[in-house]
Amino acid sequence: MTASAPRPVALVTGASSGLGHAYARQLAEGGWDLVPVARRASRLEALAARLQIPGGVTVQPLVADLTDETGLARVAERIDRGVDLVVNCAGFAGYMPFAELSGEVADALIDVHVRAVTHLTGAAVRAMVPHRRGAIINVASLLAFSESAVLGRFNRAAYAGCKAFIVTFTQLVAQEVHDHGIKVQVCCPGAVATEFHDVAGVPRPPAAMSPEEVVTASLRALDAGEVVCVPGLEDPTVIERYHEAQREMLRQGNRPELAERYRVAAG
Ligand SMILES: NC(=O)c1ccc[n+]([C@@H]2O[C@H](COP(=O)([O-])OP(=O)(O)OC[C@H]3O[C@@H](n4cnc5c(N)ncnc54)[C@H](OP(=O)(O)O)[C@@H]3O)[C@@H](O)[C@H]2O)c1
Image (cartoon, rainbow, N blue to C red):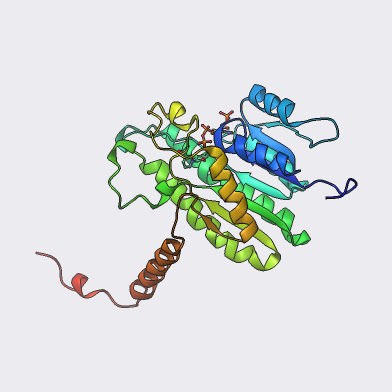
């Protein structure tokens, strides 16, 4: 980057802690100006104080609650004005037995993981398509793929369902905008050592990746054009085999006739 070239701008939600904080730090180190988003203004101010040095990157905190209509609109409006990268990273677990999940917590899970991710991805796509460049990273979770795994202690139905939405949504958006020159990634970490588990009131997992490592993988995957980034996955052909199983389900299941076992009532 030359001294006179404008710096690229990244908007990162959830930048007051954990993974979002690590995205902000690594992007700043790479010369990106930042718009960090979260509810805790003091955390964002501390991040700005740490990353901004005279002549260096600019950090413009945007305090917003993504469950709040006005807060979400302000973030979308900032994206409308032009950014080069949007990282949708804000999130929380809300782990509890589904029978005990209040409507309020369910709404917040959907607001942060589904509604905000959809609206902010939409704002980013609309702003980036005319310029034929830009990138979007949506942070999901390996728990998006956990429906067949027995992990009862997580009590995670709504959280994992929201993350599964992010995985499907992001991959389909990636297909749609690929030819417009926009890179889109869904990042699916396993356990990461952040405040996530403290907020959820569950013990931190004994074996967890550092947020720095997750972000290193995600940014390298973005450079490489990977749509699905699983930072701990040694054998990436697992992703292709997962996609092949999905295509097989579509091929075999999408027929105009009932399957044999449904043609006669059971009993
Ligand atoms: N840690 C893990 O094991 C793990 C694994 C897989 C995926 N993830 C995902 O990674 C992402 C980041 O989580 P983390 O591990 O970094 O957790 P974290 O340390 O608790 O950070 C969560 C961030 O989300 C922000 N946030 C939460 N609710 C918000 C709201 N209503 N409006 C605006 N910002 C909000 C928080 O900021 P404020 O509280 O200041 O608003 C904070 O910056 C999440 O999407 C999470 O689901 C985490």
